[in-house]
Length: 139
Image (cartoon, rainbow, N blue to C red):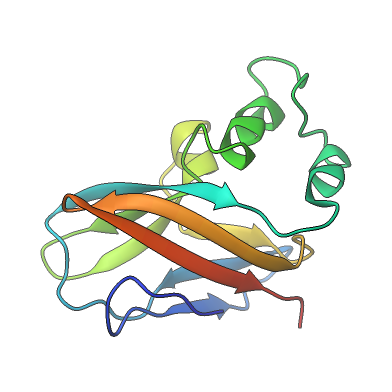
């Protein structure tokens, strides 16, 4: 996976045990001001992405209060997919579903069988509109 926020920004996947890959920032220079910067899904890959999500119960009519209903808001760009968390010295990617729905701060995680393709995200880092393009592939 690769992406660009500024020169030196890279993402990596850690082969976590279980069903997820963990994503994080390898380097970023300069480190943005301390804070959380939300990133929203702008476009998902072409193809049956919404069918894939529906197979997991993530639909417009998912029961209110469930993770599926919250995830629907994420995949339709209403809620952040992830946050760039900046401290004085480093940055981390924080999972939007876990932070906002489960009230747990954890690294951004992607199901190992996540829908393959190119995803575009948009956010605001220090007052600058920021775009990230990620290609997910199953090894």
